[in-house]
Length: 474
Image (tube, rainbow, N blue to C red; front, side):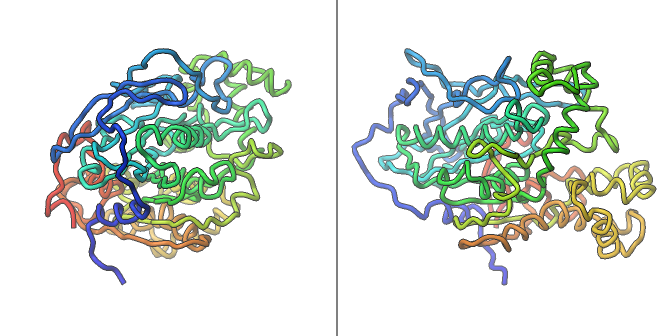
């Protein structure tokens, strides 16, 4: 049974299940003393005029540069004086079209605190999406202007390493992999150490992500490394199995292939290979990802989450922990047409449709992120029969193809998480088409992947300043 609700109300009820207190706490100060040193923030306002203290671009780990490239994050060093926290930190290295943007020195965190007499506020720790290859915590997009209009809570956003710099692995202590996820753990530990200085409660942390950010949350639900650092979780349009972890052998083989293309040794000790890779330029590394492409730019994520071996508490995820069951309260949500993120692009280009139809069994597992499944061939045949009645992709079955993409990429993984979950769980299904949408073709019906996030975050770089109204939320 589905009951209509405003999605913002659902979110706020979920994250605000704890208690806050009214204490003698200086919420007006823009200088906060952290464990590592002091920072100076700034005062901003929500779109309804509420005052919010914003602390931007604070480092939560050492810059992963030089010898720390392809290494687990290390604790940030302390500093003297008052550090400026007035502007976003650099976004992590990624591609934008044909260009490489961002910096390796990118491990920054943002904290937004409502101006209130309350303390021990609940904390919403948000992980951005982007296929684990793109995106950032840019405050123009993931700022507090909407959320903190409605919520007496602290919003935390952060950057983490992406793509090859975030997920390369050689199955050795030199580079175990999953660095992007371990960055997120480092940021959660930073919150655990420091959020009380902002008036937050480290025992009321809700972990929330959308798309690949939700994939990340899914992994944290199963990671021993993350246990105890958060107390509720929200999965929005993805889960762990949307980016299933590869074997350590597969990850190592990819790393050796990349090393070969970069003229690094491939048969020496791991330390020798990784020393060479750490000395290569970011441009050279990214340029050589082309050798892994199967279809166009696919796979978007060449280096993926990896099941780690023989590293004890230094492992983020292992073959055993990936099968573990979490019991934290869980909220799972998805939109009616999550699959538009794939289908809309494909259906606009007849040459892509023709190419996929010609090699459906080879291309679809890559595009829909299950190419590492042992039963991928059997799965592909079953998918084609169920959704497309064994026909080719064509404009007449566009909606069926859209549902296929959304179900296989996202809902399948979320349903698996719900089945394997031991704690309380709730589901929301978002079907209201608001005034804003990520759909490029506005004649299409339904709610696209990411549309429900527009009711929570401003995304001003894409949509400008907007308001939640009766036509944008239900």
